[in-house]
Length: 114
Image (cartoon, rainbow, N blue to C red; front, side, top):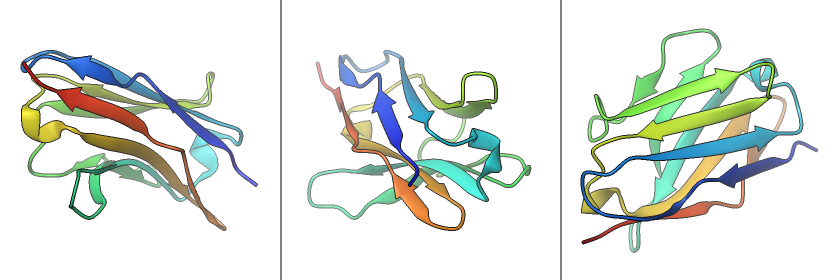
């Protein structure tokens, strides 16, 4: 069973930056796809950023140009760099990985508020 653990959430003001990290118990480059997703209150979980195989990253239109997803083989982690945060980015953020099975982290809260 794959274990994913997120870290790095918190409360920030609009315009600030945050970096989320997801530590994987399995090789991060061994999955068919990895990504970051978020759930805002009253809304469905949505894809924020994902990497399928070795293709270029894909981003939700709402975060394009502000968020960057990356992976580290040496640290076995996946990172989401979030810049120019907006109040509408407030949500619980989950990392997910798909291979033979689908695995999810427990989520980390990101709150953007003045």
